Length: 320
Image 1: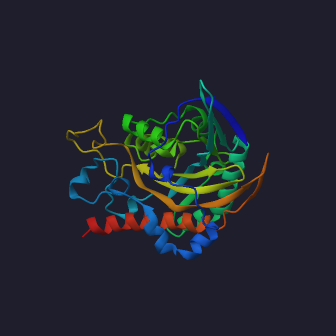
Image 2: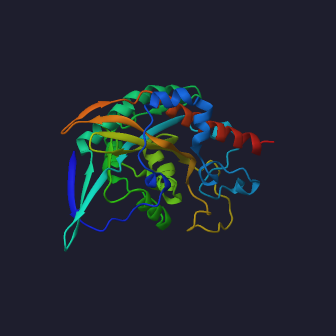
Image 3: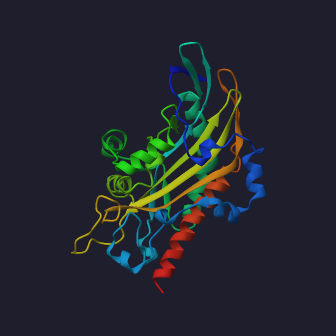
């Protein structure tokens, strides 16, 4: 365990899932057995700002979400660009007559990498298969980083942007005491900003074009470690791509507020918050004793199904 000692005043996050107590179900396997895919899909939150637009006024391509009118506009090749865990950790506090002391605990970077690798190992085959059902090829970094130029851009040159509101929400979601670690080969791209309109331009247009793909997928898993175990709290996924509609010869309003025309857009984004955090990791004093992510593949499959249900539904609605 990585221990960090600081003198500080602790600001508690106001996010609902951060304020819940850590009360565990037995396993992810039990969760997916209890809730079938349709029920899991209903539990994946997708608000109006994380799904395709269906109003005719969006034919001009404005807004951070796409206006799809045909399945031919959907991506054929998608790059999985980030796959990481975020550990909220926990803290202990004590005080003397002068100061309040707070000690923070979280998994180490090597421990986080081991956890992220295990989740990817458990889910990547199912993810690829689920996209393949729709005629889509999902690529991992070892597959799409196939030139020195792509490797350099992805690892070093790419500087994703974020709006002031996106940065605010990202800071809200990710405390400065958290630790975020990727599976091997991936670059960390903050999921807290993944629904932001400026981030959508960077991911859906700039990165997509540089990697030579049609879209990009981001995945983040939030855990919370205690002294002897760690719990899975939420899963977040986002799909970005180029604006499927050409810019028209007109003045677009709200370019700095998320309602203008943007070359990259958020195709679909969802968050699954477990009502009761689920124990998935046993921790020893200096190492991870065991991990159990069986069933994560079903949850990831549910995300992809819901994304395409929503996208297909939007296309059907606007084509009537």
